Image (cartoon, rainbow over all chains, first blue to last red; front, side, top):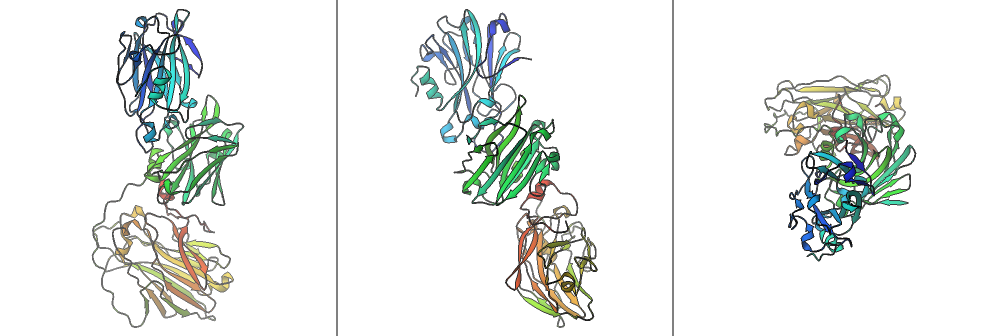
Length: 192
Length: 406
C-alpha cells in the first residue's frame, strides 16, 4: 500500500524509495457521468528555478511541447475525456537528468476550455496524482484531491523539489481561477 | 450561514442533519437514494420519496411542508455498507433552466448554491452526504441529466421499464346497435339523472365493458375497472379488485372481481355494485369516479382501441356512457381513461360522462373534488398497483393524494 498524502504534506522520495531515478507522474480523474460536455483536463509540468520561475519557454511541458530540451521530462499524451481506469495522463521524469539549476518540478492540471464549457474542478470526481517508480512499477505515493477543490479551474496537484540534496514530493492541492495561460504566467512565461 | 458553491464540501457535526429542498417555478419531486459500492442502489427500498418517506430504518426520512421537501438524516443509522446518500430533484416536464430557483439549505447552517440559468437538465443530483476518513461530509453536486428521472434512475442502478414496441393498428370498433330504450351519453360533460327508490333500496350496478382490439394478441385485452369514492367527510376510498370493498360496510360499494380477457363476440365486463342508499349510509352526498386502466405489464395496448363503455343500471333504468376515446399515437402511453362520474344524493344519482385521460406515462389515479354543484376530475391520486412495480415506474408522473383505505 502506497503512502497517501493529505494537502500540504511532503515526503522524501529518496527515503521512501531509495535509488529512485525514473519516475512516472500519473494523474487521473473520473469520466463524466452526468450530462454535459466531457471534462478535458490537461496535465502540465513546469521546471522552476530557485526563484520559482521557468528559465525559458522550453521549461513548460504540456500537450503542445511534450519533451524538455534536456531530455529529463516527457509527457505521454493528451486524454480528452478521462475515460478508462488508472492514469488518464502521465508525465515521465528522469530525476538524474534534471538540470542542476532546476529546483522544482510543479505538476499542474487545468481544465481545457473551462469558460465556454462552464466547468470547474468542483464537477470533477476522484482526481488524483501518484508517483510510480518506473523501474519496478511500484506506487510510491499518491494524493487524492477530491476533497480539496470546488470552483477552481486550475490546480497545482503536487511538486517534486530538491531539498538538501534529495528529492521530495509535496501534495500541494492549490487551486486557481483561470486556465493554463494564467498558470504559465504565474511561472514567469508569456503565453497566448 | 456557510455557502457551498458547486463541488464544494464541508464537514458535518453530530449525527443529525436535515436538508431542505425547494424548487420554485416548476413542478419537481425531491428524492434521496442510499448508494452502495459502485454508486448504485440495491433495490427499491433504497429510494426515499413521497410514496416511501422513510428508508434505511430511519436513516433518511422525508417530510414536506409548504412545497418544501425536508430530508432528515441520522448518520448513526446509515448502514456501514452505504457509501453515500444523494439528494435529487426531478421535473415532471421541462428543464431546470426554466425553474426560477432551486434552494437547498442544511440544518447546520449550510446553503448550497444551485445555479439554474441555462441548465438543460430535467433531473439534478443536488447534494450528497458521504464519509471521508471517518468524517461525514456534505457536498454540493449540482449536476444532472437531460433525460430526467429515467436517466437518473439508470445512473444509480434503479430498474427502469424497457420502452414499449409500437402496437399494430387496431381495426375499427364493431358497430353498436342503436338502442331506443336506453339513455346513451356520448360527449364529455353530458349527464343524466336516475331517481332512486328510497323505500326499497337495492343495488346500483355499474359495469364496464370492452372488446378485444383485434391485434392478434391475447395478453393485452385486460382492462381493470376502478373507482374512487369521495365520502361526505372529504376522504377518498379506493375500489378495485385489490380493494374490493363491501355494500354493507364502508365504502358501501364492492368490486365483483377481475376479468382478464375479452373478444369481439364476448366482451369483457367488470362490475361494481353500489348500495343505492350510499349517501344515507355515509351521512351525506357521495361522489364516485369510474375509470378503466391497463397496466404496462399487460402488454402494449391502446385502451381506446378496446372501446371501453360503461353502463349504470338501477331497477330497470339504464344510462350508458359510450364515449369514443380518441385513438392515436400517444394512446398506448395513456394508462387510465375516466369514463364517468356518478354523484349519489339522497333521492337520485347523476351520471356524467367524463372522457378524461391520464397524462402520458402517468400512473396517477383520477381524483375528484367537489366544485360548485358538480365534481372536478384531476389526475393527482396516488398510484395503485395490483403487484409490485419498479420504483421508477411508481414515480413517473405519480399523483400524491392518498386514499383513506390504502
